[in-house]
Every structure is written in structure tokens, then in C-alpha cells.
Length: 129
Image: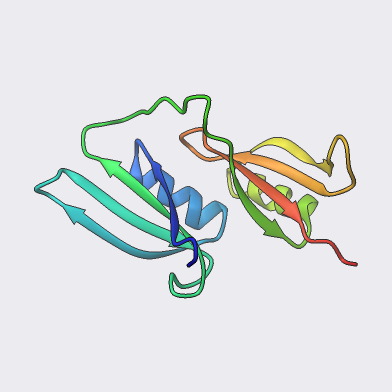
């Protein structure tokens, strides 16, 4: 068994695709409209679906905003250099909500960014040892 994808409901699919592909550098892997159900599914990721987990962005036609609730935490992405990644995300128009730096009670370097719908994405710097 393996994790296939994580689904996020998004209010503006084009805005979200611009963020995940243009700001975070993922690829649009596939996109399907379901007119009878009035929704679109778009799958994005850093590699092919057969090789690893991806994100499913679900856009329900006519819904512009969702409440995130208190149960959602974040998506985590491994990066080589959290400081440089934050700088690049800001350069591309993304929002860094916690600048890169060591965890409060540890040494792992992390940062947080937010997507256009407010979903948090944690950047975790790969350890060099």
C-alpha cells in the first residue's frame, strides 16, 4: 500500500494551479472536468503519480471559498535550502507565513507558506548528515 494523493478543495482553480505550478514548481499532471457533477479535478506534483503521492485540487463549480476548520494541519515538502526556497517563493509572488529557521524545540530548519486558499505548506530542509 502507499499514499496516492491528498485532496484540497479550492475556490479558484486557475489561481491555485498558478500557485502550485508557478510558485511551488509542481507540474500539472492531469485535469478533468465533470460537467454532470459540476466539478473539476486537477492533480499536481513533483513527479508522476505512479512514483509518489500528489495533490488533488478539487474545484466545485460555483463555490468560491471554504472554511479550513481546525482539523487541517499542513502539507510538508522537503527542500534542499529552506532560506533560498522562501526567497524564491516570495520572488514568485507567494506568501511566506513563517520565515525559514530552526524549529522552536529542535534543530530542523523549517518554514511555512500559504496557498491562495490559506492552506499551510511546511518546507522542511533536508539534513546534510
